[in-house]
Image (cartoon, rainbow, N blue to C red):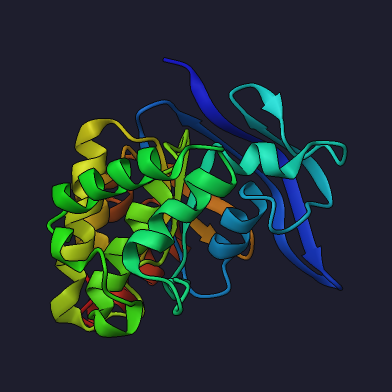
Length: 248
């Protein structure tokens, strides 16, 4: 099994604050790596560095063995291979669902409008949103908007899918309809790195769980090992707080 993503001693600071501290990570093909940790632990920054939305200070990020953190890399070429879904949907409000999904395949990948529309409609049908193709985002529920955002990221056939707390802005009732898509993608073998506070969901999809604290991975292993039998004291305290808050 080849490695889709490798991070080697990645360091990132904002001013005096070290956000990622010599962090290393390997994500094999067809696996899901789940990042857990409190707000401010470095999860979102890590995803943004992988997507080249942030520039790292030191270390290396490799995609399929090629260093993408090289300052001379063509960022657009890299992003053609990555899908990223944010907390806040980030759909274009003045474009329909179909237009949102077909934008990148046409503008970035050079597909014909007809080919992009056919592929988008197939994705919408697969995820039970075919009847929303001509709607504008503000006519959709939060869960529907986030599902469209995931579909938009899939429309470019990404090599790696990055998901940043995709349920944090949703009403609890809507969370499962979004997570069901990710479960389907896991079943299909999509390679993913996702940050989440949904520990039950993490248990279902994670091949590896990484607990982050102050920009360090303090514990990593299977979902069973990290979430049910953590050995690190800080991991134990984090999970205890989630349990007390009813999130575990």
